[in-house]
Amino acid sequence: MWQPSIAPGAVDRIACVGAGVIGGGWVAHFLARGHRVTAWDPAPDAEERLRRIVGAAWPALESLGLAEGASPDRLTVAATLEEAVADAEFVQESAPENLELKSDLLARIDAAAPIGVVVGSSTSGYRMTDMQAAAAHPERLVVGHPFNPPYLVPLVEVVGGERTDRAAVEWAAEFYTLTGKRVVLMDREVTGFIANRLQEALWREALHMIAEGEATVAQIETAVTAGPGLRWPFHGPSTTFHLAGGEGGIAHALDHFGVDGPWTRLDSPPLTDELRKALVTGAAEVTGGRPAAELIAERDRRLIAVLRALREAGA
Image (cartoon, rainbow, N blue to C red; front, side):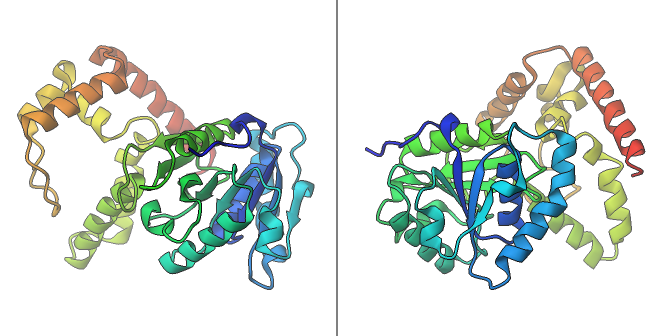
């Protein structure tokens, strides 16, 4: 059974393999949390580009508040991958989205990094089961899927592959949480993970409307940002639907509207008793069973805060 060499809260030295937009964003995030970071990227201009990414991100990070000792000076750029991960206590891989490349790279990282170190991949779509096939120690390889820019957007989706030890998945989830991330610890693998699949559904519907001449790009942007997008910082689709049911909640909304409305080109699954129960139970868990009036008042306060923040930002 795999065992970590260090507790998540004791990590200091982090290796970031890949220093593009996502990898550079991770570097900035970890530096802002006070870690020492060693990075490696095969591009000849990698160090110059990486330090430029960190420099551009640093004012925003300063405004949010830095951890004690946080500094861009704690960044080192290694000459080789092996040098970068040799004494790492956590490794974040952020190579381009190519399955063969990622599989080979994770196998190289696995061969060079200390055996008790967790290795996270920033893949935006691949299953870890497919990426860990060539690794000698696949039990410590996990997906840590961030969102751009990683130094500002808190979400990270964490899931292991078929050969990943559950202890490594839980270790990674705790580590990311301690660095200030909001972690979704997934129960099972799904290609594209959760948030990307939700984004993709909206994007495809938008493409259909543009292609059919039903809406312009500008109309769709306004429809999202001035409408449902305002609620999304604090209410996901199920809670939104729950409040649409008024005092009867999501159970009333499901009975009234169902799930297969005429407003999308995407097919919905049948509203079985099992799906209905999962939605009603899930909404109750998310809202803590609070009455609709209390939730609506809270929603309105949050909407006002979002609107004020947008106004102050000139949006």
